[in-house]
Image (cartoon, rainbow, N blue to C red):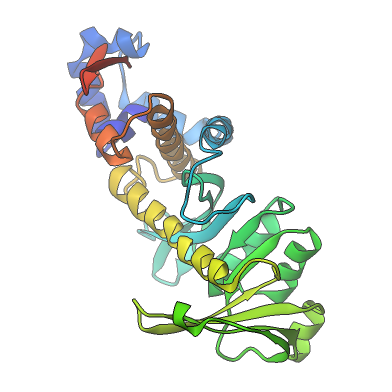
Length: 328
């Protein structure tokens, strides 16, 4: 399955044909017997996806240690996470368990991304009906860390739980939320910051769910010609830093785009819930493995370039890159 990810195989039959054509070289990959698509299909169906999830988490721990000092554009000592989700459309007749709409099936791919190295630290795969905000209940909150989210995660009761766990959040406010200003800090409007205010929520339910002070920052993005309103429970960082942190949230969007374009998670080798989760976790494992290779070997090439090289050198014991030979 890792071979399929690295070489962009389209189906189980494709995997079987390619590996059998290289039978004399399979011992390099520690494959001792014939490869059968029926064996792969059965493994995808019955072998628990949690095996691959646990393996991916082991790799994630190694990768995060390697990227601990990685610069992501904002000078902060705290860990910064970006939370978002992407939807993978499926055929309802083939995936009847993945409920989304009356005539459509889909799975949601929820990811918490560590912005240092863009390493996914939490992944949850659900059917398309699960609302994004419910994922906040599944997170293990890290005190002192920043959680950057879009408006889809604006739930004041859940944000208050982040606050009670001594974590910081930054999200966008909706146009209809009610807020009473109590204090305004001076701002430099030439930076794009329009106002930096402290106050409380005044809506009946929002005030009950989040009874403490909150910070509201209004920022005009000149590139987009758009005015954004940020909400956070951090009162110490400069307003411009909060705006920069939210801009970094786009890294999770780029992660989704990258993994969809370069790994196999848009078409699947099986139709069961277990098969889909298995394939996604193996794809994540490959992404993190390549990130580990890049850091340990101090390669300047992008993850995309490294993947392209691996795709054509899978059966080579040694392959050159920049006049240096690395073992596979």
